[in-house]
Image (cartoon, rainbow, N blue to C red; front, top):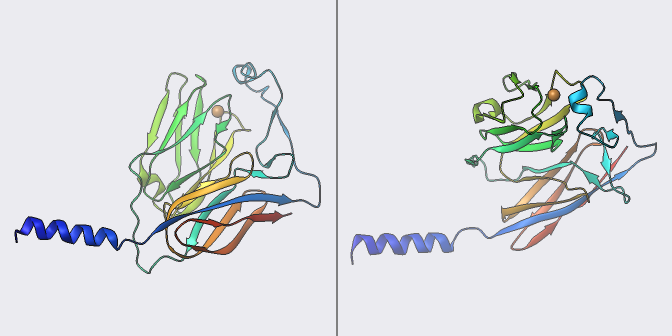
Length: 234
Ligand SMILES: [Cu+2]
């Protein structure tokens, strides 16, 4: 029997023993006792920003649909992996845009060590100001003619939630959530999220929202879809 054949057999057997993967799906809802905060963004500081909108623009601190489903909640696996398990950061950077003088999306997730591509669709002077505590502070001008800038993964080495602001436009603020593993998602406009390709196991899943706070729940993932719905009260 040749060595190549033995190697091939070994690889097939190893593949067959890989843990099955499932997904975690759910919806994030808000339960509010008071009125939802909603502030109109005044772009009067910069006529170039003002000119990009024909309708009033709202802050994105709390974005709800008619059923109080929450957009821009970050959901990720907090713990439950085998001890010492290492994760490889995606090679492709995450992407955030400056569009209409707003950061889009308002919340973006990166894995520790993953880069972030910052776009400037506006053709307006912005600056990218990341105010991390565990990670280094980043403050870079983004001139009108600069269409993109890639911040390497060394800027996102440690898990934490980093506020991202533009000092030129005080209403521009967002969050870059640095996660310890690649299993996370940001909820869509209908509050739904899906974390894909999760190895089978028992996990603690955490939701974070800048206004509504955090909540955790235990989720058992097997071969298929595990459900994790969250209601955040305020
Ligand atoms: Cu700006």
